[in-house]
Length: 341
Length: 135
Image (cartoon, rainbow over all chains, first blue to last red; front, side, top):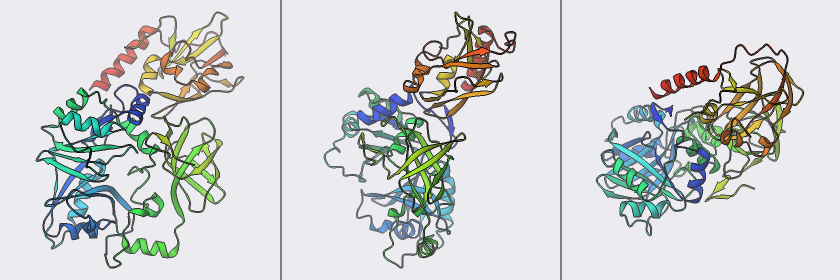
């Protein structure tokens, strides 16, 4: 067990490697109830999100659609990454556990005269089911008929106490269920009854890293702009007059030239890349932001913040030794298969 | 439950040291240590011929979780390393007192080792640690 964002969470339920493999070839369930569920109501909820998020949430086409987006500070750096869901009446956001209270405080401080009300829910749980068999097994366990119609990044509100979204953090097919705390134990048990094993925080980290997904607080911080976190794709620049928080700083940075990027590394010798290791490229120094031994690939992979021009071969300092590594474009693994070049 | 072979001696940092039939010392990490580390994915072995003081970091074990230093239980010279760990680091998890041994050591001072614990002292240490984990 480990302390994570004020919650006691299992790193693994047995073997982290076994849990990782199980999600890649079958399915696994994750208790991610530590994450924050924030409901956003009021007649101005849409316009409020459009001026606080880098993506234009008013463009979410209809109830049942969702988008991955970022909250920035005025300097254009990343406070949090989140998914925003368009509900029947208003919106819902799922935010990172460690910053959920500061996110709500930050958002509240920008409501001003608008008709917006935020509620950080303390009566919900989140269960993620991920893996090639995840959607079918979830639907079977919970008697749902979503599998033939739920598109990626869409969701359905099944009842007052359950919403199911086709989203995840592993690079596999899967769902994330937001349910009432009251019904969560039964959902967890029913997933167990169709043989979906429990997966700990450790495999969650190796799975997301293989999928090339950034972790808040590690690959992105309140000192890092989206350009340097491989997240520029989340920004909606149009319409040009949508003045979201941080936009001015991003435009200034873009005009003066962006000098860093977040990209992938693979280690070409035996060893394990870890957060904080220094990287030398022919274009200058960089640093590993997340690293691990990839259980799927059998060699070490990492995300690293490097000079924007850097490509090809580089070196990583590991305990005084300089080992050769290669710069690659993440993701490393998708749907169970190697995808990096 | 953890296993504490009585013929071995133990460090507070969860290494074990034993003696082979030739009088050479064999070093590894304990059942308790491998369980705490989780799946071992890489062992950075020491160079044969290198010498270490007692308590000096001699090599590194990387698990899926983190990198951990392995400390030399007694002063001495490394005479052999377990090359099998290069390709099968998981032996440290599967058989920590057997095929998961890490290196053989020629001790510098045969009297040294009084700092080490016997199996019942070491068992007590681990059980105290486990109690704290359960709080």
